Image (cartoon, rainbow, N blue to C red; front, side, top):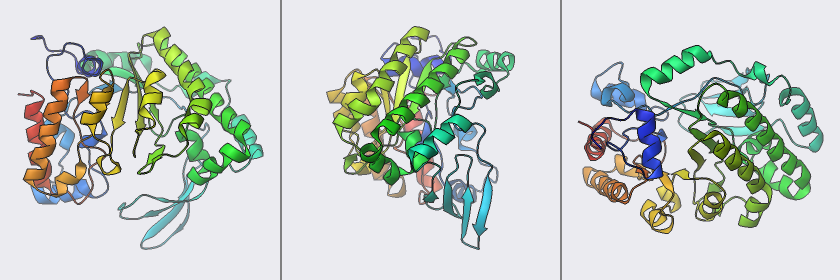
Length: 366
C-alpha cells in the first residue's frame, strides 16, 4: 500500500494482519526507559533534554480518554515515613508501599485496602459505585475529537492497573488474592464481575462520544513458573468477564482486545485467545517466551514486543540477533516489534540507539 495511513489505523491493521503502508515503529512499552535509564542516556548522549519519543520519531498509536475506571474518589496520597534511602507512602489505590528513592527497583507492598469480604463491600459502596458514572468521565470531548483528527491516533480504553485479575490483585495483594480464591471465592467472583460492570458502563458512555478501537486489559498474572492460578480457575473465574468484554467490543466495533501479562504465558494465551483477546504482549524472554513459537501456534494472534531487553546491555551482536528475530516476526505478520518490557538502567545509550535505528529501518521508516 503506497498511501500513508494514520498512525492508529496502521497499528490496528498491522495487528489484524491487514494491508499496511509500513510497520508501526516505537509503539508500546518496549521502547521506553525505566528508572534511571533516561538520566543515563542524557549523560551519555550529552543531550540534556533528550526525549527518545521525539528524538527517534516514534509513532503515536492510541489516545486514551480521561476518565476514572478505578477507586473514585481515590485514596488521598500520603507519605507515612521517609529516610535517605526509602519512602513509605499510601497511593491513590490505598496501597501502602516502600519505594527506593532512586526508583531502582520494584516497590515493596506493605498493606492493601481489601483483606476480608467486609472490606470489599465497604470499598465497593464507597469508591466503586455504579451510579453517578458521568462524574468519572472528565474528558473534554470536543478537544479530544480534534486531537485524534489531527494526530490520527486510534482510541483506547483500559490501561495499567485495570484488569479482571490485575485490579483485585492490586486491592488485596498477590498473596491475599491467591488465598481469597479458596477462602472467599464468592467475593473474588463479585470483585471481578463488579469491576467488569463498572468498566463496560463507562465504555458505553465513551462509545457514545468516539469510536473505540482498542480495549486493553492489564493482568500481570504470571511468573517464570507460569500462571499464578490454574487454567481451570482462569476459565471459571475470569472468562465470564472476558466474554462480556468481547461481546461489548463486537457491539461497538472495537477491533483490538488486548491482554498484558509478564511471565510465562503459555497456559494463558490459548484461553484468552479463545475468549476474544486478539493481541497479547509483552512476551518476557527471560520467563521462557519465544514469539516465534507463539506465532507458529497462534497465527491469528496479534503480538507486540517479545525482543530480549537484556541484549541491550550486552553487545551489538546480541542486539543484531534480536533484530533478526523481529524481521522473522514481521515477515509472518500481525507483529509490532519492541523489547519485552521497559528498558532498564543498565542499558547504555550507544546500544539502545543502535537497536532503535536498526529496528527503525526494519519497520520501513525513512
